[in-house]
Image (cartoon, rainbow, N blue to C red):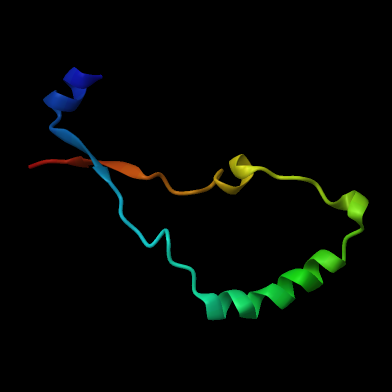
Length: 68
């Protein structure tokens, strides 16, 4: 794999974002909607979900780029 990366002049780059920022006003606006949605379900219809479910469709933290 390392030879392929060298031969094709590829580099792994860390993607940067706003991972620590939470808009508190937007969160407060969404909470009542979330509570109403949850109230529609009986407790026996609620299932536990761990981090794997939350991060399943998350974009990768790194990407490959072609160096010219």
